[in-house]
Length: 260
Image (tube, rainbow, N blue to C red; front, side, top):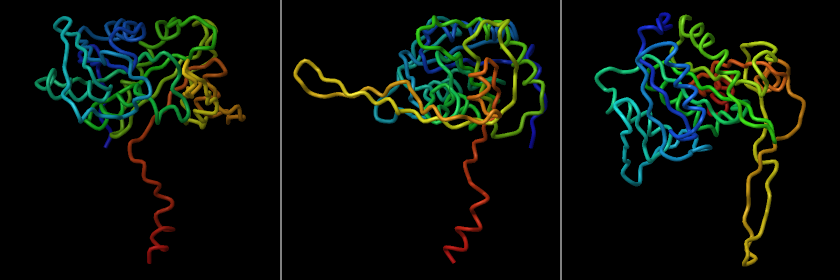
């Protein structure tokens, strides 16, 4: 069942990320959120949690730090932050929208399966709250800039919140690494495929023991034009609805027959 459009001027927004509460991107996202509503809260990891995906901390206690009455950090994962914010901080008045980011780097294609930024939106969606993950592509050797989201994100989020929002759906937005005037388009597209880990580098410590870095490079195969990868690499903003139900319904009859 679709949820009705959301009036952001009366909404409560919770912000989190995976780059930590001290990251530049989350400060920009808070500024964007405050242009939409006065009721903005922040609960984010104390330290960087990039690549944490949808992981939980279950083998040690979690500690929450309060900076002021609306800014908090947790010494855990992005998912931990959403859970603590929803079940503790805001349990008496749940947020209407959760924004994640702005991530320092794109989350396109298969990145969504590794991303702590997307995991924030995933956990929010599981808890029945609308959620948007926002990421900014960074080119190698290029200074990090959030000029694109600063210029375009508020209007984009306002438009998306004004739609009838299906349950179990979150939105993944990625901005290109260009100045606002050079953004070519905003397109609603599927997410593509690109493989992390092609650039696996072996190095040696001073004692001669090997260690490894998973590098940033992905396979350079041609990607379809109707994917987030192609849109962002072409200078556009990609918007992709992601669905929590991972069931491959088309194959159910095939495997049902195999099982007799």
